[in-house]
Structures are given as C-alpha cells and as structure tokens.
Length: 494
Image (cartoon, rainbow, N blue to C red):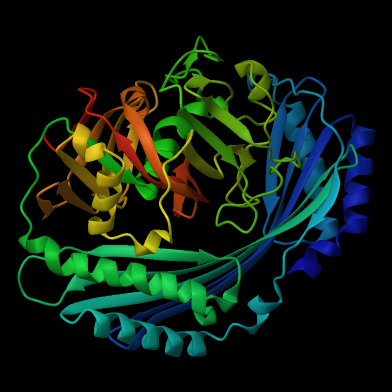
C-alpha cells in the first residue's frame, strides 16, 4: 500500500508543474486503503471480509476562486494528468454555472512522512483471527452464563499522500484495529443488547494481554447488563443530579458542541451569528473546556488535513467561553476563525469538509479516581461520590452509564442522547434502571457540570456521518462528570 503512494514522486511533480503552468492551485489526493473484518457468533465464524482500494482525487482552484473536483479508481499517472486537464476545464467553466468564488488564506508548503509501524497488517490471517475470537467469545460467556455474545475484529489501514502545487507533499498512514462484543440474554423473554469495544493501532490487539484484559472486563460488564436490564424498572422523568461517564461526555462534546463548531455550518449554527463565530461569549461553567485535536495512535488520529494543512489543536470552549471553531481552507475566512486544518474526507472521491478528530470535555482540578476505569463498578462510583461529598449535596444521583448514540439540532443546540443503563446511587444503596433518553440544551448541560473524577479517558469510539461521508471519531472526558440538576437537562419523558 505505502509503496503505491511512494511511487508517485514523478507524477506529483509533473501534476504540480502542469497546474502552475495553467495558473491554478492544485490539491492532489491519493489514497490506498485495506479493511479486514471477522465476526464470530456462537463459536463459529459468521462472516469474513477483505477489501482493498486505491485511487486519487484532483481538486483545482482557479485564480477567480472557483473549484472543481474529479476522481479515478486507480493510481495511473497518465490518467491523473488527463483528469487534471478536465478538472481545470470544469473549474474555468464555473462562472457560467453561477458558482460563487471561494478565496483561500495563505498556505505554507509542507513536506512530511508520518507512517507508524504497519508491517503486522500484511500478516493478518482471517481464519486465525476467527479462531482467536471464538476463544474470546467462549471466555465472555463462561464468565457470564446465560448470555449470548458475538465478537468482531476490524483492522483498517488508511494511507494518504497529498500534493499541492506550492510544493506541499505529505504522506501519512492511519492504522486502526478494533475488537467489539455485543451481548444479549439467552432467555426467551424480553432482551436488551449491550455493546462494548476497544481500540489499538496494532493488529496484535488480540494477543495484547493488557488490552485484552481490559476488553474482557468491559465485555463481562456488558454481558451482565444484558442479563439484568430486562427486569429493571423504568426511571421516572424529570431533572435530576446526574453522573455521566466519559463515553456519554464524548457524545455531548461531539454531537452538541463539535458539529456546531464546524465552520462550514456557521450560516445556521447556534454558535455563530450572521455566519461569524460568537467568540468570547459564555456558553458553560467557568471551569469547563472543550478541546479537539489529533491524538497519536488514536482511532480518529489524522496528522494532516485532506488539503495538506497540519491538523492543530482547537480549543472550542476555554473555561466556559467560546474561543475557536473547526475550519478548513474554504471556511476559515468567511467564518472569521483561525485555520485549524480540520478538513477530513472519507475517501479520495469526496470533497473534504471540517470534521472533528478526538474531542473531549476537560474540567479544571478533577477529583482523583485511583486505578483503571474498567475497575469502577456502580458501587465504586458511589464510593467516589460519598468520599467527595456529592451524596451530601444530593441524597440520590442518577448515574448514566455508557453511550448509545444521539443527535443534536445545531441550529438550536437541543440534544437527545441515549445511555446504556441508569443506576440510582444513594447512601442507602444502588438500584439499576432501564436506559432512558437524556435531552436538553447543550448550554444548560455545560453550565450544569459541577465536578469531574479521574484522569482524561479518550478512547470512546465511533463513526461520524456528515453530508454522506463517514469518518472515525473518538474522544471522551474524565472518568466521570457530575451535573447538578438543571431544568434545561432532562432525563426520560416523551
């Protein structure tokens, strides 16, 4: 894969020369990608898949600020040159189509190679992976009898090389491996499915004792929940003191603030006014911040944008105040924000757009939470609240465990999220309840954050969809966040 991209030196130089001679800015994106996927259920391989692809996309910008994008499903240099000519012709005809111009900020040429260790991807054998997954599935069901589980493994290697005619030439590879489990009760009655996952950049994940041990703890907890939830009562609706874990906090940061902070949506975003970011306005508690940045060896790591611009740390909210948005070379100027290199594309066929990578909520001076996150069951979370006075302030607290998706209206800032389970924690004990919807205003939620427990935990995984494109996402927060009751944040109800 990497060799295919490394072989494009001569073609890249000629593409850049021809673009300069035509008086256009060229961004040439070449991508090579492979995916291996195995699913095991009831001790047998249910499905296997292997896919590889390679291709390139040509994007040109004329002196009049009009752009065109074209792509091919191959990496043939001669065809790339012909595609460039057609893209230039299409961009020059943009005025006749009524296309508006897009002025770009000054760009600094960059040359770099960022390729983590990837040799193990060529050694993956799907039959051997299937046998190992069957062993892992048997261990999960052996730990929690009465459940049925499926276990899957996905290994993806996504490599890009991006040329611009100003001399920019960056090549980077993003290795992603994930093991996931889905558990249900084995009985004939009502069922609840509970999923969990763990990421590693290395395909050795299935033989990594430390990571696999963490995954088995997560999978065991998911299986026990699948057994217990059918008999749990529903939680009453209303506004309550809440504890949310880092996965749900990631959902809040990503869905509520992250998408609203993407600069290509500022015409309608609640975080903008008249298309300009509302920098400086108070949107949350003074000890709460939201940060997005690429984290090395992370599921959503990407060191450069799809336009060849370095991806930088973006502080969306700094101690309660809006600071900056997530922008690319087309949106930064019109939105009045700093260029953060946030452009991502699902593939070479797609037009890049501002997207998140690893997004998180940070709280000043978090309370300690010793040990690993996987060691915290509801009893130990209750002990944290007792030791730090939370249960003196609130005799009962609703602990929302896990994240099962949700959505936000970026025009209003109203959100609806789903958790995996609810535990009512009090001095007199712990009671499990079925999951319920958490809804409200993102501003109310960020103002309600009172304290945090534990270090940052940033491996909450997902895939983010926007305008027909899906890219990996990740993030989190501290182990747990405590939210005081707020009428703008509601649990349950219609």
